[in-house]
Length: 233
Length: 231
Image 1 (cartoon, rainbow over the protein chains, first blue to last red):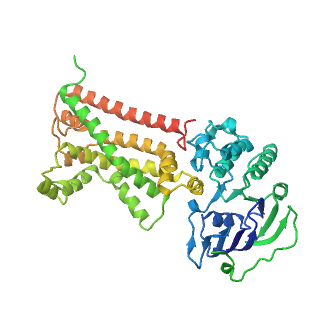
Image 2: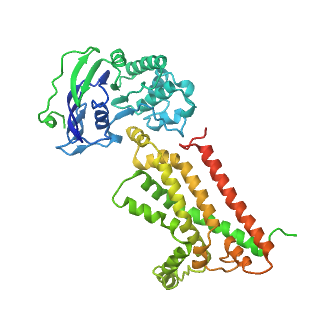
Image 3: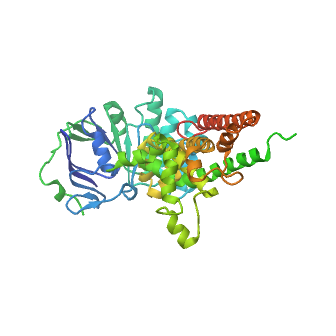
């Protein structure tokens, strides 16, 4: 399970999330701009320390305000893929992939490269790649570290419709083959419905619904009381 | 007929040698300060920034005098160095290197700081999420991305050091063959009637060196691009 029970205040904005998700498949996180998706992304990845609460992944506490647990990003086991990919520009794609890889050239390595169709660009520098290739390489780089959870922050939003569809297809394929659970953040419901096993909708810093199989269903109980007591420690 | 006289050759070599050593010794410190000022916010940031850039706006003679107060035979640092180890800095070759390093340092830090500021902090976040430690991120991601600034800063500092006059004459004096650099040699010949040809030669030499340094700096930053990547 991925347990997220936290509250974060940033000026007038308050993020108040009480959520438990299965650590499998692809979970879509949708909401308009300012709904709190990016703040939640930053809290999960460890880029932002929530005001209070807790986050745990498969029973391991990553953040717990009361227990003073705050696992640094490098040891969270959470991979991140940013909107622009952000491959290290001075390294080839292969060196980018090897940067965090547990093992280079293994079956897993080859599986990820094949699933994302990036073998032909391994020797290229990121500046030479198309937008779609760059995103696929960024996803591969994050997966090579064999994370327990992968966060994708609007990875196809800058791509044209054709490339977008192809990239979504490859994301689904690599998830099915590697079985790394993913949280896919987007403001485009159609992308998320197409790709995700379940959808979490956020609005004004709160979760307003959680569905399965990509359908918008009954509202999720967005709890507010003593969130930190719910997490595994 | 020789193009340069022995005095001119000696001044040229001393200038190049002292400037190279000055840049080499101050580079690690400049990278540290440039990175710190460009990527971190802390109490005293503005004061440290001002202190680092002070040599850029202070009259070089003032700098030379301050260095003399510190490093002279009776200086705060100079006296114990002399008493304990017999090291005399003022009016020596080391004094030339120190004067050159101090005047070139802010130019180097400035270029490196600007380069560090331009790096998207999410590169480091991506590296962290891949399990990299902070020293590894610095060496494998931050430093290569700062490379254009490091090269530009180094070249500019070298050019500035080659042209250094005020701080050098105050701290190191004007001793031919020992501390007389190119600008000091030029100053000496301009004080001597009938040496207009020598003065012009040294002047042209200074122009060529400064121009070459600027061209190299420009070519390097263009070749490396904004993120240290060869296109």
